Image (cartoon, rainbow, N blue to C red):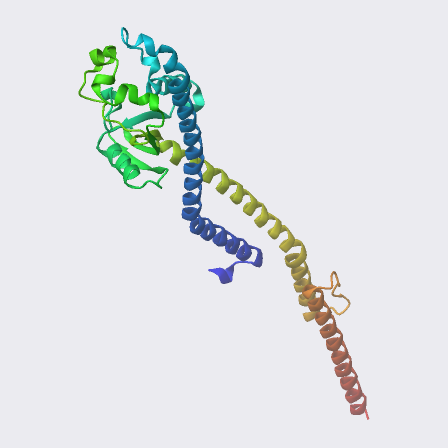
Length: 306
């Protein structure tokens, strides 16, 4: 089939094959790379949110809690709980469009409020932090009934002595807190002990769709550039190769029929120009040979007259 095509068509097919092969070969690698970049981007945002929530916790523990500690005996104030403050601030943050898909949980092994109780998967993460003191962060994907999620987790430790006022032993805790939550959960904590994990999660399709969108944009840009390259190559090939070859072919056909007055034009000094010079030398040689033949035939004819 290729033998029946002209030179420009063969070059076009070759470039299209290269484009298809190149996009296919790099598609998987590009998708993986962009997915990893999307994960890193969301991880960076998640870490900023975790650090922000840690700052809220510290502010509540060091500045809010001391101011309201005297009121806890008669009335339990959730605003004095660092975890409560962090959750409330995060819910306010989620009302903005750029953070509405993010979720925050302080997954705790032994929480006062069972809302923060770590499930089986979260418990494994917390135990990893407890068993490896140098492990500071865990990321990955998790399947849940509502769909896959991407999560970033960091260890949650008892960093302030004031936390032990409510979580050391039930006898030391405010009576109002015992009345609300009971004395069965949220006690026995120790200073600097890892009691849970701060977990930021986002639907996995956010990561995948972001990566796919980036892949599509890059592929469109590369394809556009490559198609433009194909057009430019075809234009250059047509101007510098195809048209001169067609002109030389036409002149060679005229020379072959005895029209020696036509000349091969020297349009360049490249290979096409060298080919034209070769044809021109061949034309001169052919013209000289034909003149010799005519002279030979002329001399023979004169001899025959005597």
